[in-house]
Image (cartoon, rainbow, N blue to C red; front, side, top):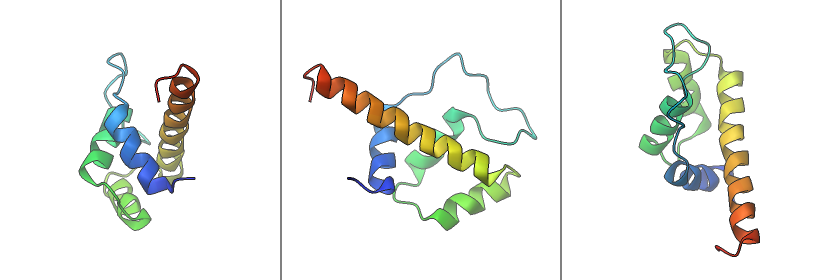
Length: 89
Protein backbone atom coordinates (compact mmCIF):
# COMPACT_ATOMS: atom_id res chain seq x y z
CA UNK A 1 0.00 0.00 0.00
CA UNK A 2 1.26 3.45 -0.86
CA UNK A 3 2.07 5.88 1.88
CA UNK A 4 -0.15 8.92 2.37
CA UNK A 5 2.29 11.36 0.75
CA UNK A 6 2.49 9.32 -2.46
CA UNK A 7 -1.27 8.92 -2.51
CA UNK A 8 -1.83 12.66 -2.06
CA UNK A 9 0.61 13.41 -4.86
CA UNK A 10 -1.45 11.21 -7.17
CA UNK A 11 -4.74 12.64 -5.93
CA UNK A 12 -3.82 16.24 -6.56
CA UNK A 13 -2.76 15.38 -10.07
CA UNK A 14 -6.03 13.64 -10.87
CA UNK A 15 -8.84 15.25 -8.89
CA UNK A 16 -10.15 18.62 -9.92
CA UNK A 17 -12.38 20.58 -7.57
CA UNK A 18 -16.00 20.81 -8.58
CA UNK A 19 -16.96 24.16 -10.07
CA UNK A 20 -20.13 24.26 -8.03
CA UNK A 21 -18.20 24.33 -4.75
CA UNK A 22 -18.48 27.73 -3.10
CA UNK A 23 -15.31 29.65 -2.40
CA UNK A 24 -14.17 29.67 1.19
CA UNK A 25 -15.63 32.41 3.36
CA UNK A 26 -13.17 34.40 5.47
CA UNK A 27 -13.13 33.05 9.00
CA UNK A 28 -14.44 29.62 7.95
CA UNK A 29 -13.10 26.60 9.84
CA UNK A 30 -11.53 25.02 6.75
CA UNK A 31 -10.15 25.95 3.34
CA UNK A 32 -12.23 25.22 0.28
CA UNK A 33 -11.46 21.91 -1.41
CA UNK A 34 -9.95 23.93 -4.27
CA UNK A 35 -7.62 25.79 -1.85
CA UNK A 36 -6.53 22.53 -0.23
CA UNK A 37 -5.78 20.85 -3.57
CA UNK A 38 -3.86 23.92 -4.74
CA UNK A 39 -1.81 23.90 -1.51
CA UNK A 40 -1.03 20.18 -1.82
CA UNK A 41 0.03 20.63 -5.46
CA UNK A 42 2.39 23.40 -4.35
CA UNK A 43 3.72 21.33 -1.43
CA UNK A 44 4.15 17.79 -2.69
CA UNK A 45 5.78 15.45 -0.18
CA UNK A 46 4.99 17.84 2.66
CA UNK A 47 5.54 16.94 6.30
CA UNK A 48 2.62 16.96 8.75
CA UNK A 49 4.14 19.96 10.51
CA UNK A 50 3.98 21.99 7.30
CA UNK A 51 0.27 21.26 6.91
CA UNK A 52 -0.31 22.19 10.55
CA UNK A 53 1.58 25.49 10.09
CA UNK A 54 -0.46 26.41 7.00
CA UNK A 55 -3.71 25.57 8.75
CA UNK A 56 -2.70 27.53 11.86
CA UNK A 57 -1.63 30.57 9.78
CA UNK A 58 -5.13 30.69 8.33
CA UNK A 59 -6.98 30.07 11.60
CA UNK A 60 -8.56 26.83 10.41
CA UNK A 61 -9.33 23.71 12.43
CA UNK A 62 -6.56 21.14 11.87
CA UNK A 63 -8.83 18.18 12.58
CA UNK A 64 -11.34 19.31 9.98
CA UNK A 65 -8.60 19.93 7.41
CA UNK A 66 -7.07 16.52 8.07
CA UNK A 67 -10.54 15.02 7.55
CA UNK A 68 -10.60 16.76 4.16
CA UNK A 69 -7.18 15.29 3.29
CA UNK A 70 -8.41 11.79 4.20
CA UNK A 71 -11.57 12.35 2.14
CA UNK A 72 -9.43 13.29 -0.88
CA UNK A 73 -7.37 10.13 -0.37
CA UNK A 74 -10.52 8.00 -0.13
CA UNK A 75 -11.98 9.60 -3.26
CA UNK A 76 -8.78 8.80 -5.13
CA UNK A 77 -8.78 5.15 -4.02
CA UNK A 78 -12.45 4.80 -5.02
CA UNK A 79 -11.67 6.28 -8.44
CA UNK A 80 -8.72 3.92 -8.91
CA UNK A 81 -10.88 0.93 -7.95
CA UNK A 82 -13.58 2.05 -10.39
CA UNK A 83 -11.06 2.46 -13.20
CA UNK A 84 -9.51 -0.93 -12.44
CA UNK A 85 -12.95 -2.56 -12.47
CA UNK A 86 -13.68 -0.93 -15.84
CA UNK A 87 -10.33 -2.07 -17.25
CA UNK A 88 -8.78 1.37 -17.51
CA UNK A 89 -5.65 0.51 -15.54
